[in-house]
Image 1: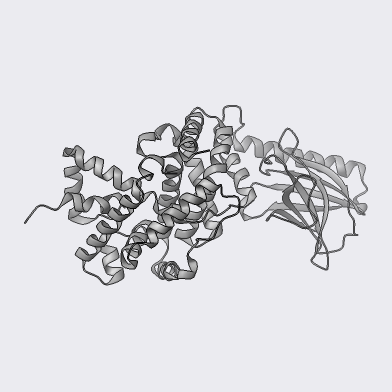
Image 2: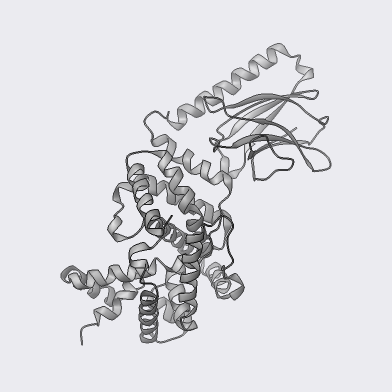
Length: 193
Length: 213
């Protein structure tokens, strides 16, 4: 099955969920839970808390499926975005010492998760490898800046404070990094999964 | 002061990293400029790629059941949670009365079964007499296809001994009997896990409920 076909199938599932079909929710869970889990665990560094986030995420999907807009991205990206948002809310509720500990773990290269995952379908694995390669091709400081924004939910000012860099430097890094990512992954505009 | 370079700020906006005056000005411009809105959409699409670099992480098997259980009350035919808990408690009570009526009190030991922190709605009892045990537990998540609940007896050696497997009855209760492989003694534990159909030789998932003899 191609990524595009997957996306069409997932969009149909979201339509069914909006009509109260829990079987469709089960199917969407099978497709998207592991990705949502990866996002939540990366942000929170806590497996149990990440599972709570995934549960909240799919309950939100169930309740708000009628708000999904296929023109703004794939269902998988929507689910991952909800998981990210909920995980960051939890992260922000933690005290500062806990956040520093999490930050240290994120900076540890050993924490990078690039090994093949059991059960991952070949197409998804190919996409993951491609995205990972695009991110790794970025200069380290650009990649780090993007990760602080995405996985820690930091604002430009907070990133500048965290890195001890001028605000203008942070803006430039984000702009350059995102432009390179956008150019490296043109396929994502139609097939982000 | 020169106006901000909105195109340069679009990637930060797409990452939700814009703040302060930059954010206020950007929001104003966004209302006016269709081009800027399209650019933000492009960057947001690029941003959704960032988590794709992460290897998938499989949640525990029980999570799916919890998710489906959590959305079940929204379905029209589902009874409100308090109603289900009420009937579950009533069933446990009646079961106890019936059991007490047919057993001599000094022959029977009643073990309260409670859900683990993630399964606080789970409650029930194990009635133990000799090596026989009657199990009645309410509030367990619905079983995914190909799964069952399995009872474990944990004795002095702390090694779980697999007992019978169970499925929920139509009312959502786990109700069944078993003959324990080993005698029960003080401080022995009973535990319930979710396992593949036909059960496992050793637990493969987290404990959902536990009772102490």
